[in-house]
Length: 144
Image (cartoon, rainbow, N blue to C red; front, side, top):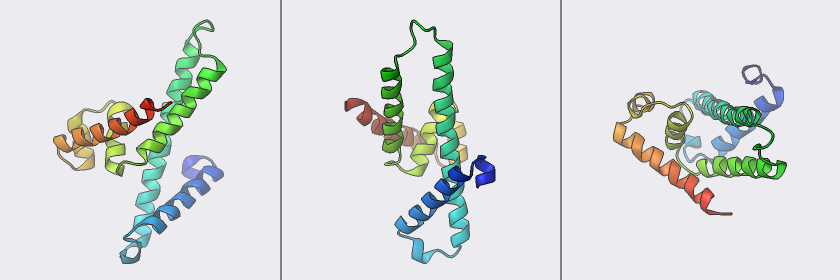
């Protein structure tokens, strides 16, 4: 994982999160293929980390493109990063498929049909997933 992520510390962080999720899983004792389960969880976490990195990079690119006069102050910049962290935390409260659908739609700009094919669900389920994730994010935006 460290090689895939380009950082030993990120690899260790993902590995520890994988085992936290395994410990929290209700199905942990009944797994026939624990290694496969660990690999799937690790791949999903790596994908989430990459999406988050893309989102943060997009924000930083947008900041660089803005003139100094209209650029946010350090306090505004910090507040926005904190908001992103709160939204990320809120999205961890929804199902992995809802989170994936939200990222595919909002960050990757995929169509509902394409998302449905990737997640192996119906288009109406994709809409429900996106709505669930957006409501979780809206809850974060409603709080100061």
